Length: 196
Image (cartoon, rainbow, N blue to C red; front, side, top):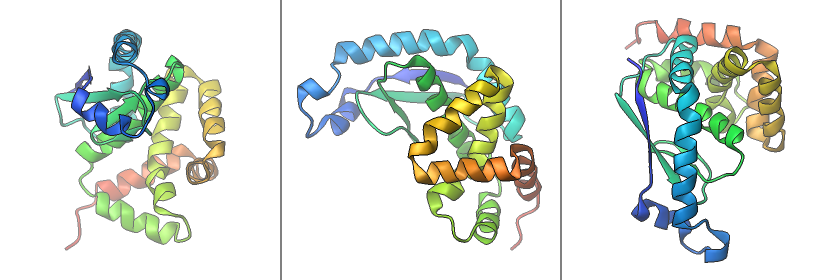
């Protein structure tokens, strides 16, 4: 099953992110709604391809029929509830969505996440939680971006995260180990029966 994506604006939700910010610093409702319309149009072009590719590469299945993507004026994007903010670079927005959708399929589809987490703790004891939680994600992201958009887009994504040390380290681990090996290891662990 491939879920549908619904971009949604919630005034109540947006108010949480708007608190403490000057109106001049925060996008207006008109700007946000315009952004949502443009994003719906831009994302729809590759939506099915992206969702299928994420599932195919991760070997995880989508469980929800619909994924709601909340759009607010300003925030650091996160996956549950999937929330992004208005940015004017549409290509960057699509890459952010892919990143958060990979988190979503992990939330929806992983049977043995605890086993994977135990493996990460042993394999990378010195790495922090944020780095560990992005190793599998970045491996899948690498393959999705490469397969759908080419190596140059992967390189741009890795370069983008150079300014964020925890994310940068996760990309370095993926590069050292290779995305294929990390995904293979994840699937070995994922398909084991959870030990009691």
